[in-house]
Amino acid sequence: MTKTFDPTFLKGRAVLAPMAGITDSAFRLICRRFGAALVYSEMISAEALSRRHSKTIKMTSFREAERPIAVQLFGTRPAAFAESVERLENEIRPDYYDLNFGCPAPKIVKNGGGSALLKFPERIAEIARTVVKASGRPVLAKIRSGWEVGSENALEVAKLLEECGISAIAIHGRTRSQMFSGKADWEVIAKIKQQLKIPVIGNGDVASGLDARRMIGQTGCDLVMVGRAALGNPFLFSEINATLNSELRIQNSEAPAVSWLERMEVIKEHMAMSVADKGEARGIREMRKHLSWYIKGIPGAAALRQELMHAETEEGTLKLLEKIDPEKGNDE
Ligand SMILES: Cc1cc2nc3c(=O)[nH]c(=O)nc-3n(C[C@H](O)[C@H](O)[C@H](O)COP(=O)(O)O)c2cc1C
Image: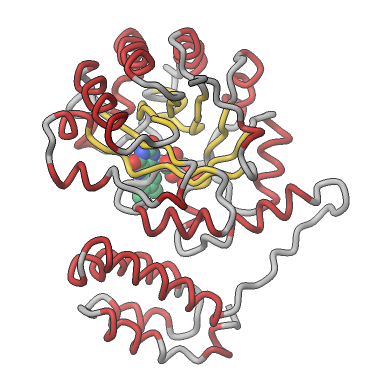
């Protein structure tokens, strides 16, 4: 099998970012439906996977319709990555693996994983080489611009990853110390794109079709990765695709409004999958944050949000959502 990652084979140029606690199978499938060209799993612990931790194994499962999918792994020990990949190769065969060298969360960096590895490029290289060797398919990597302002080393790390056989790199233009503050630096994406041969996926602050077009224009990136702006708004992928497809004809993209009834259909489907995958109690509990994003901007959302936080069943949740007047829901 070829280990090349060819973005022109994807349908579209906007991909769903990996987001812990969010990009589970249900949400990924919904985003694929609305035109995400590629979806990433939540970050998954290579250490836990290599130990066959059953909850972690469950996190790796996906529906065939989600393909193409990248399963993202985090950790520090190359052997744990290799063992995880060998098992996944035998069991679920995702389209790609992705290595997390960007997570800023304290519980991950205190163990030396995620963005903490940016301080140790040699360890990053060791992990990358090991996974590339263990995997029969392309291995991607995701990095931040550096550990902290003043010690940005994304370009050096990206070049190293390319030398190690990584097939594409996603770059979030913020350092670890910036967490999610300020504006993402797209310059670093442009620099990396100029110097690498492998495809580059730009990430940070894309919230509209026009942003996606601007990022591609300013950086030359092959794909754009969308995270927070897709929360409660999987429709964004179709807006981005429409904007990019009509690039030559129109200057401004007027995103067609999504009616409350359409939104409600998506919510129902999302919730039904969440319940089917996780059981009602956990499925509904995990849906609460999505619901609060889906109803953002709708008149009466604040009060409804409070009620939704206490709903325990699918039926009860739907009853609460049905209180939204479809006409008012459209006034967003
Ligand atoms: C709630 C949340 C969870 C995240 N989890 C992950 C993760 O598991 N792996 C990862 O590489 N990045 C993770 N990220 C970072 C995103 O993938 C992305 O790089 C970041 O949100 C910037 O993109 P955006 O401006 O489009 O949101 C997470 C971000 C958020 C907001």
